[in-house]
Structures are given as C-alpha cells and as structure tokens.
Amino acid sequence: MKYVVMVYERGEDFAARTDGSRQGEYWGAYSAYSEALKKAGVGAGGAALQGPETATTVRIKDGRRHVQDGPYADAKEQLGGFFIIEAADLDAALDWAAKCPAASWALVEVRPQLEMPS
Image 1 (cartoon, rainbow, N blue to C red):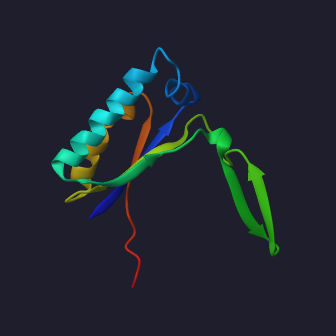
Image 2 (cartoon, one colour):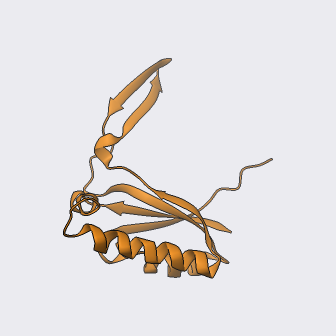
C-alpha cells in the first residue's frame, strides 16, 4: 500500500533550508533519508515545497472563484514537503516516518493514499 509521509515544519525550519550555517545539515539529513528510502525500495516519490508565504489558495463560493495569498491555515507548522512510500502496512510506514529528519523537531503525518476507483 502507498502512504504519504507529510512533513510539517515551523518558520525556522523553512529558514534552515537557505541559512548558510544550517543549510548543509538540513539538506544532508534529507538526502540521507531519501537515499535510505530508495535503497530499501520503498520510495515512490515526493517533493520539498517552497515556504508557506508562497502559497495561494482557491475556493469557489456562490459560483465565483476566490483567491487568497499565503497559507489559509494560521498554524505554527505548515506543510513543507512529502514523501510517497510503498509499505506493507501502517506500522512499516510509521517506522519510515520516524526516520524522517523532521520527526525529531517537527510533525510528520502518515496517511494512506486513497485508491481511486477506475
């Protein structure tokens, strides 16, 4: 079964991506995690996302499109990226999520991917 491992980070975590003093450690940890997923044969995709200040939300209300800049949710942690993994069951997916670098400083959510009817 495929699971999505979603990484929710705080503002300082997003800043670490480009902060010269922390950038190497941040990306090094994610490179190692991505490589481990690949070597184990469970990695099925994923991507890092730009910061929440680049987000745009869209909603249709009364037949009209409403667009809002920035993240809709006012939260301390925002979605920073995701991994799609192929795991035997939820326990195996949770084991991989626990190895995600962000699990030690932020929130990592695991959710089964919905199989769409054909």
